[in-house]
Image (cartoon, rainbow, N blue to C red; front, side, top):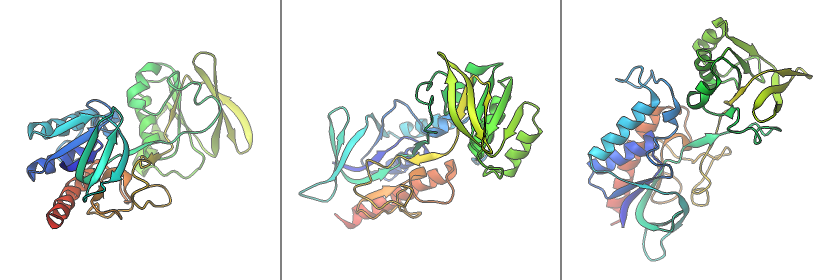
Length: 305
């Protein structure tokens, strides 16, 4: 039986793996994608993680993974299908996608979030054929071509600034004229001669033949079409909490209700990273969550021997 099973291999899960090793706890980290380090991997540049100014998200994630591996942390490439309390003792039974099972005294859930979709015609049809949620991953495919970014937050404006170095022109399409993005990002976008900001507009349909060639929008009630080859969706994220939802309390948006200690409504289950209720979702807060969850799990194990 494991002391801790960590679900998720992003910064929160990797930090939990490091702290579990340091605490000499028997732990394993589950990540469904081989050598994935979470959403940080798609960030082209990280400027707000102390000591690593200007590092790429992929490199920072790999450093965290290597750190955990150097300490002897165990990793398993698999996905959790079900989590159920053990019948004869305290702890949980995890059923895995590839047929295995794990017994553990505690669970640290660091499942992160996934990208929200537009829900419009053409979105599914052209996914991977002009539509993307990752400018860093797919921006190079649109070198010298026009692209649109949907959204008004930090991710949307960061994506647009990144794409402005690659694409012929970039349209930011926002449903509001007041942006959620930071003032610095907005100012940079407004000063770019390659970026055009379209406000009070919503996407209606994405058009094309084999590949995207335009996006239709409704602006102040009027329909118009913009010729683009790439559409990058940046309208927020949804917590990836379905698998844990039957066991813990969630807020109205599906985030796990947990404080800085990671303690949830379920005994022995702790929540770390973007999937829990918190004001700031950043790498540095995810790392803090991972450490705090291990401390909480270690205390729980000690008190329930």
